[in-house]
Image 1 (cartoon, rainbow, N blue to C red):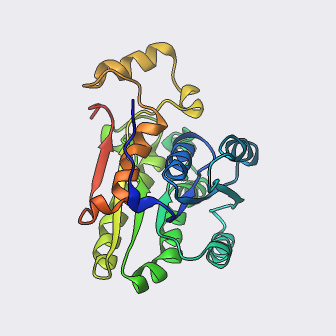
Image 2 (image 1 turned 180 degrees about the horizontal axis):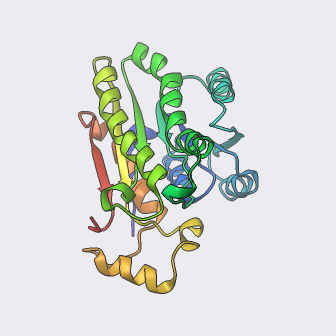
Image 3 (image 1 turned 60 degrees about the vertical axis):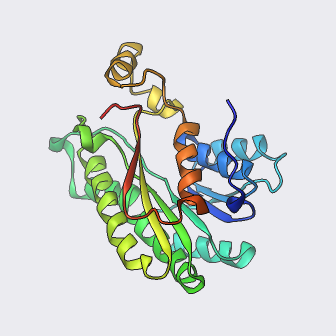
Length: 252
């Protein structure tokens, strides 16, 4: 199947958080194949180095930087390095997250803080890091990654779902605040995407149940999510902001 090409993405500086594996790797590859200059951040060094090697033949090839996004000082320093080395960020893909399972009874205050730091806080501060230059030049795109999980009330994910629900609220708030300066902020809500990490949570029977509940019966891939991200980041979506867009094969 042929893929769309967006001329407006060529040479844009795109930063993908959690871009070394799973859905994030799909974004990294998709934007790189559009001719964008991609920098992806991750703490998973082995996966990220493997991805960088696999895409090294692209020009420009995506660049991996290790960054612990839960350390806000380190996050801010990393974005400062990116600005110094590559210039102003055109597109931020706020993707990094972790959906470890947990129950209400076992959550401690420390675990609450950790999960919200992993799944929500860094998105806000990454946006804060890129927004001033976007506003100054009158444009830029911030794409936040939500989750279908809280829309469905899936079990054993209460903190993850709390964070993901918050991301949709944050998207609308930042779209309003930044829109006056031409900066667009949107949210992509993936369904159940077939990644190595997700495969560990589901049996073949569980996967079959998900597909049966979808209107369309295919298994979502990272490339399906990235395809929407390409459009939303492009000039073709110039008046799209402040909302969330589902890629779930009609599961919800």
